Image (cartoon, rainbow, N blue to C red; front, side, top):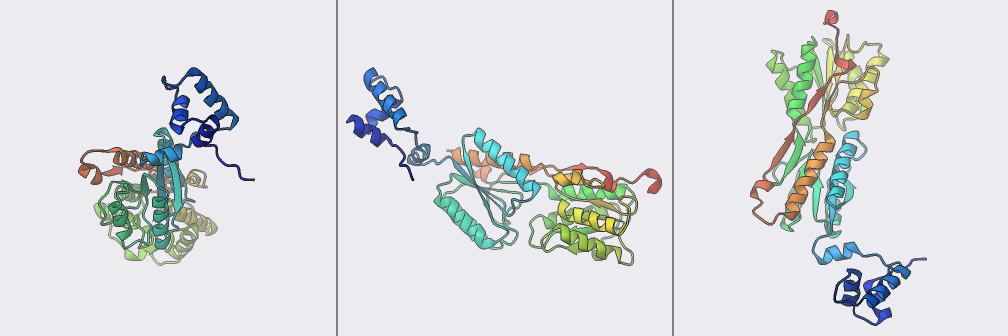
Length: 347
């Protein structure tokens, strides 16, 4: 059985007074008599009346809803992002609607449309890897829907952006391997469409060149999805090469974990024979055998800052040029663990 929600009108009709009078009585307005207030409160309790904050917010042209759209929810990094977004939203009295695109452009467009039709006050977006035409973001901005982009951001859209310094993180990862005495460092690159892949590849090349190493394109392999399975297969391929690498820097922890599994199958010692570094500091990286060196992206902080910027954009009543052009770049941190730490005598 579906129960009808009690409204102010229901209470007003039973007491033969106006809706405005009931509303004032519930708010303890001084113009309403004590007797009527008691009647209203008693009837409200009997009928299980609860204020409809959503309807009230719509009348004020403010829903209290924030949309969040990202390519994948399953990853640990995504879960930390969402934790930062949800916690900050709750603190600011906003509720969150979450959507996943699975890196599908049409799903991205439909999800954004659904969020807009749900009356969200603004949307936080990590762009799909396969999004090349960005017109749907322009259309949302033309509808005065505040947008903040995070982690994977568009190339040509003006709007606040919050992301990790991927180039610096990859430079740190590769530089660390060089400092441990590794000479032939391979890179498992993200898929070409990924908006994180190129900055991390650039950081890898920057570190090699800085330390006088040449970039060997044969040591660079590109993922289709960037999964553990791909890391596993690429590692097997690397170990069959003439001039095989003695270290592997992977675009994310998932592929790096696949690498560790393949090396373990081949009885190749990590880190003495081959060093491995990942990116994103997933929960699993700490508990691998050996534990995985990785780059911390601070997903919670990215989510927190993106939410704060969006709420500022929603509430601002003044010139927003500076805010629209704001780019917040969070600095990564290298977390050194067993997979890349050679002892001095083994360098």
